[in-house]
Image: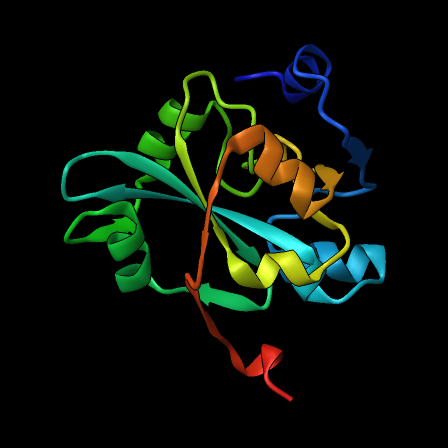
Length: 159
């Protein structure tokens, strides 16, 4: 498994790892633990394309990925969730703890435009008991991510 703290130090990322009392495998659980809105949890979803490319999509915790929008942004016909094995192999992290950055090999990262409305958020920290606090600007600086409308609101995100 990759070591996110080593990546953060090596790349001089302005972010902080937080250790939680218990493992959190969902955005809602992490938000509840921190006492913040679920939208402030930035989910990092690992997808594969019809061209067999692995991508990471970062979106607020109260939204769902729009697979067609991601495929358009990535320039492919189709994008789907990667298998657990493929996600771990490509990112170095298990699902439920996947951070939005810090992979062993460069991966294209796509950031939903809704993430930009938050001054900071919390993403996976590499393991279910860790969270990474960072700003959207720092996320984009480090990942050189592509921003676009890549999500669909859920009932939790609509007033």
